[in-house]
Amino acid sequence: MTSVPDRLSPLDVSFLYFEEPTTPMHVGGVSVFQAPKRGFDHDRLVELISQRIPLVPRFRQRIREVPGRLANPVWVDDEHFDLTYHVRRAALPRPGDDSQLAEFVARVQSRRLDRSRPLWEMYLVEGLADGRFAIITKTHHAMVDGIGAVDIGQVILDTAPARRRRTSDTWRPSAEPSWVELVAGAVAETVSRPTAVVDTVRGGITEVRHTTGRLVGAAGGLLAAVTSAARAAPESPLNVEIGEHRRYAMVTLDLDDHRRIHKAHSRADQPISVNDVVLATVAGGLRAWLLTRGEKVGPATTVRALVPVSVVGVRDAAETGSRVSSFLVDLPVGEPSAVMRLHQVSYRMQAHKDTGQAVGAEALAGLAGFAPPTLHSLGARVASGLSKRWFNTVVTNVPGPQQPLYAGDARMLAAFPVVPLAKGQALSIGLTSYDGRVCYGLNADRDAMPDIDVVAQSLEDALAELMETVR
Image (cartoon, rainbow, N blue to C red; front, side, top):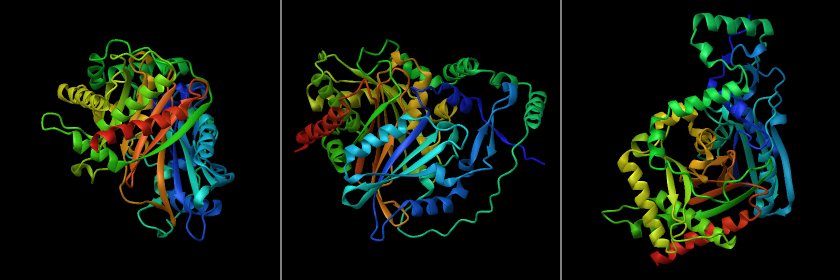
């Protein structure tokens, strides 16, 4: 007898219906590794994933629609699962540089995932200079939704370059339910739980409307945050109609520099956090970028950022989830002084905290299906349900481990997020701190942001400007 399949939640399904050619709903990542002496190739990566994939059974399942959309789709085992289809090999002309890698990332992340198969892909990119290689991941939001979810990119990493014992794999795909069984299951669910009718997906428009209602109704914290920013976001070249293609840039900065700035400028009456330094760096970078474009930048010019921030404290270390707050922050790009930008950012962040105008972890869980492996997608998920008039860009900051991680014997050097764009949003900025570095990933619309490299350089210059105030 066929086992009862898991049904997608209404929010999971909304990620499928929100998806359009211009807004693929997957979260991505780019990890750069140093190859060990004996090398690291596609066969080694396939072997590593085959050892770990039993830990993430969802990654061998695909989505099956219910006839007539009488109920939400279900997860079913992929009877023809082919690991080598999902784990792909690519190479840059040797010696490949970071700009070539970024161009390849942009092309890969622009394409939507194949819905007839499990909704994830991984690429091994060989040929990087200095004996390096990269692993690019793409995972659909619906795949990793939920507090207990784990992403395929997590399970291949270890804290030491040792071979983990092979996980026992007794997986045999269950037979897919027939259309009769799918319909019967939908009818039975409706009879046993009449309220399920409210959540039933009866079409794309219905689902979008339903989800929008949930986004508005479930987010008491979000509405509080919006109260202080009810006025429309400033006009900005960051808000335009976007296309299907992307540009991508990577920036690596020193975490100790951020800490030095934080310590040098903190006062008893106004403590400066490392995240304040990050936002001041972004403000300075965007200011310089706007000036290179000849945009009008006056003393009161701001760029409004939606800022979901992951905060992992000592008491949270043993917990599976992280605490998250999210703010709408007006970044003072019109302020010419780096120190004044830093203090203005800190003041505005503190004002949000003092008034409770934040989206707490519970609100985010109900709003976006918060899951630790997809912290960077929180901004995109919230952004998808909000009017673009409320903010200009999204900035996600996720603290990562400060010790080296390994894929097999290969040491990970850097990890860059790829935060998807929402409609009308030309640029998203994600950053992860890892092993003493702060890794920025800039994802942008290809037509609207031909100068993404200028933004990347401007971020480096903005941090250097803040460091000058320390010296």
